[in-house]
Amino acid sequence: MLETAIVGLGNVAAWHRRAIARTEGATLTTVADVDESVARERAGEWGVTAYTDLDDLLSSEPVDWVHVCTPVATHAALAQQCLGAGAHVLVEKPVTATREEYESLVERADETGRRVTVVHNQVYYPPFVRARKLVESGRFGRLHGVSVRWLENTDPREPDRGEWVLDLPGGEFGEGIVHPIYVGLRSAGYPASERAVDVGHVNTTGDDDIEYDGIAVSYRTADEVACTVQHHSNVRGSRQVEFFLDSGRVLVDIPTQTVRVYPEGYGPNATVGNPMLNAAYWTARNAAGAVQSTLSIRLRRGLAGLLGQEFSVHDTHTPVVGREVSAIRGSGDGPTPRAQADWANRIYTLVNGRTRDDDA
Image (cartoon, rainbow, N blue to C red; front, top):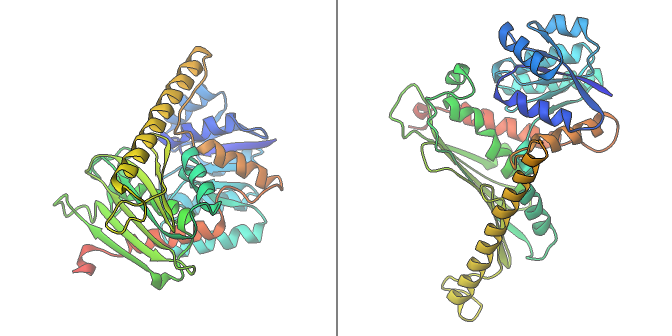
């Protein structure tokens, strides 16, 4: 049994607590936060011990595994402490603020023989997993491109995770940009090189305290797959991933938890007879699937409520925690490949290494 600690008790800590509780082979034993009142309150709710200092926790508790859920600027130092104490580490995204911190952390993990893994949870949404299996089955031929569209109806100047996000170039928005980046990496594959990556920014806020509230990332893989990632705030929210293949499109829609399939095109070069009628058929068929998905989610939520259980379609931390527990115990590769973690950090630091002045 992995005795587990959570360090940093903001919003995401509750998802980690739930995932640990649902995972065989791990148990939450202690928590820590610099705010003593928060640490004591969460410890009381969850039936564990509370600390305000990580050194005290590591020297007093037999901890096997630490989940670091603190602001990104603190990730590297805290993870290094945990590795030095002999614990495995699971770090919330973004894993580190700089390349130097990332490379040093990986090197330290290899030296100690302990695992350090970043949380890339949103690749475990069930429709995304289904879509990737469909794409990889070869049913629609070769993959040519992937488009990731992450739209947030939030303002980067209004912190949700805490005031610390306002120290980031993209504010609240800048903390979350790793999500669509790693979704693109898992969907299309990795860039052929760092020179194959292009990053652009927009700032529609008109506020000079925020460097950007939208990004456009594009790259090509060594297999000649093109990937584009658009992430915007201050717009109507949506999260979609679209795969473009020889003979079809596969669209993942996260809000409706659906996979939409379009086997034929309907443009001027359409090869099917009655292309507009065919497109209407597939649109209707996909819409029916969305209705079925919505009804299924409501049914499962209602059933969970009757049984006094928690249910959320957004619980993508449990698959991460489960896979990492298996990897720590010697089975499987874990939830986040190191190459994916490395490229996500490279692109994240590229995004934050450029300013609007640089682009002018």
